[in-house]
View (cartoon, rainbow, N blue to C red):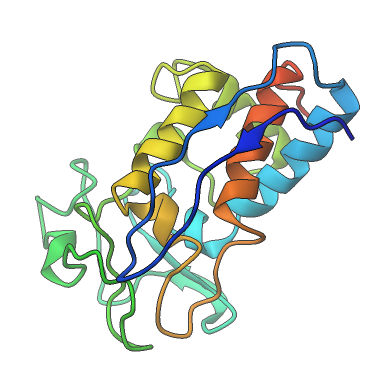
Length: 204
């Protein structure tokens, strides 16, 4: 598999500080479609993992609880609704429990936290319960991905991680929470490989 992405990002969590990532992107078209599809399969594993998908929910604005420690997936306890603001401004602000801190190491039953304000992802980024084809189409659609091309998606991951945001937290979630698959560096690399291959999507 051709990999011309050089990842210089180091997840150096000393007090949960993430070093700024810098990478050399592959030339567009230099990655085969097959390798791009394989990269997307790994991306899909990450974005549908509970560490990502639980806050990438739809227009009902209700975060989810799912993963090995929860058993069957269910809506966030305590009837939490983040509202159209996606930060809970209309009801109970997310930050009431999810305080902002660069220290990710919470007790198992304490509310998780990261280095920027806790909130749901924009509704256009709905991933919970979505298929491979649906998520692939959303990620490559500038009208539903924050106006980004594939290079800017890579930059978004790097920037969020440099702020100790949810991207960094996904691989170091504290407590006994299961982290997202593989590593942050590998996820950033896969996003670049998929983009350079033309962002191929699965059928169906």
